Length: 260
Image (cartoon, rainbow, N blue to C red):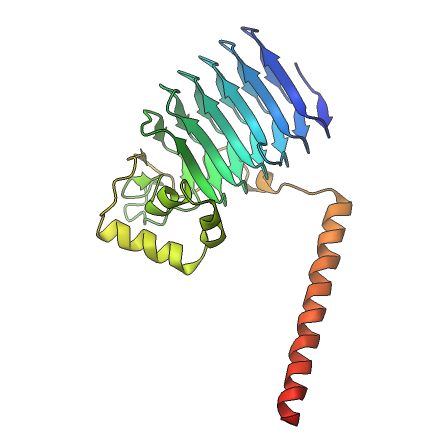
């Protein structure tokens, strides 16, 4: 399946019970699900773009009972969920970009032996949502925009492992409304306090060698998920209108204050 451009549908791609298939250089955009691969083995998913797949249960790439898949050099941005794994084992993900999504990864405890390497996870609301109390997923050598450890020896990797699931993600999994505070000072303060005084038991998921910068060969410019012009123009007009209304409100408030 090569070189297709699919958008504004329910599933850009939906495959079931089909082994040893190749999917490359496709675009799956603006749908409920970019690609849903189910009950299959030994698939290759390469150089595909899955963008702006949003909705109540939307996802960029969904794997359900898929084993021994290779996913590499894909761009998954502005999706409700970047990659969704359930009952899927021994899959390898490398040199993928997962950006500006609600959750970069959703992994069920029924999935095992999966590996993520040389992948960039950038500006997602949460990098990982775990469904279940365990995971043996291996994260090694990925770039995390949330990581803040230094690189004193200059080897390109941060000096300490990156803890993928933090205490705020622990709360988020139980209280949906906490998403409103995800990037606020309270969340940062809670994360800093938990690093110094860990008191809650959360699933210990770490990247042993988090990168300081994007993996080699992955252009940062590729993470700009361009919205359709109509959407971008509408967003700009809305922002300008809100700014104008805010200015009028401040000006009116000052006048009333002077009169008082």
